[in-house]
Image 1: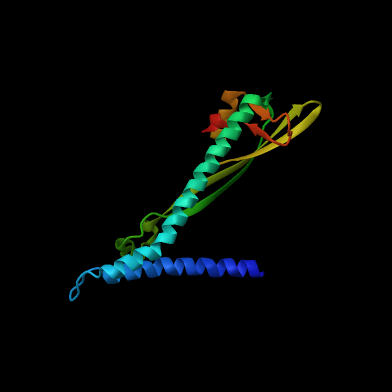
Image 2: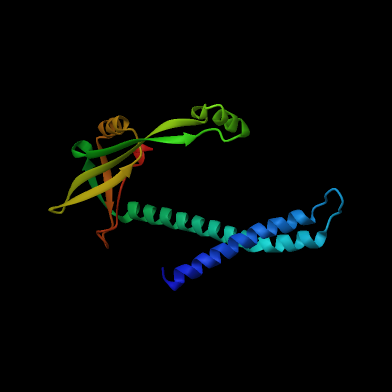
Length: 187
């Protein structure tokens, strides 16, 4: 662990501590049994929460800008990119399937279920599928091996490919490594 990682950890712990302490100070300023409103405590607590609010808004706006930038780049690639028809007959699907236990109830009644030995009522088993789709695409005398991960039941995925039969690969004419395979029909 280098100095930069240690500094980042300390910075994040201070940030989280300040956030928590801000809430504690706000609650200390609220009226209780034997005390009235303390506006100074509430204002100090809000001032301590202000950096978190600024960080959250900044992060949220950055994500929106990145999404718009990605959508614009994708639309640009679809518009000016080289279009290659892809036959979906030669698709290889490597499937990975597993069961995952998900907690469905974590209320106080769930604690009672665990107390009497019926913790199974608080959980359910969900089947997860992850398929790695590999497509060999001939392009200018070469073969492009395109891989994509798709979270869908394997049988439904095969049915979608059988119905669609072909799709389009968009390749950037300036940078052949920049490409996009249109698998939007799977959504």
